[in-house]
Amino acid sequence: MTEEQYKKYTKINEEVQTLKNFLSWCGNKYKNKFTGKYPFKIDAKTKKFDLRSMLQFCSIPDNTYEISVELQSRIIETIEKYVGEKELEMESI
Image: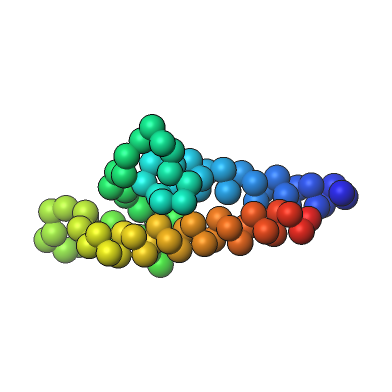
């Protein structure tokens, strides 16, 4: 494994471990047997999804939005699929 491949592998592995930690609390595939399902909060990192800055001029007192259980399940499924893809990518390195 070259140094470049090692850096790429390490970066992917850090992201996967963070996501697995999240999924151990509220996921299905990577659920920890000692924890239940918990609601979660998504904090977007990009300006495109920064609701706080867009809504600061509105009269909305709270920037928290409820989403359905079905949508939460789809988000979890998408994250689990992403983790699987990244694990395959790490195996190919």
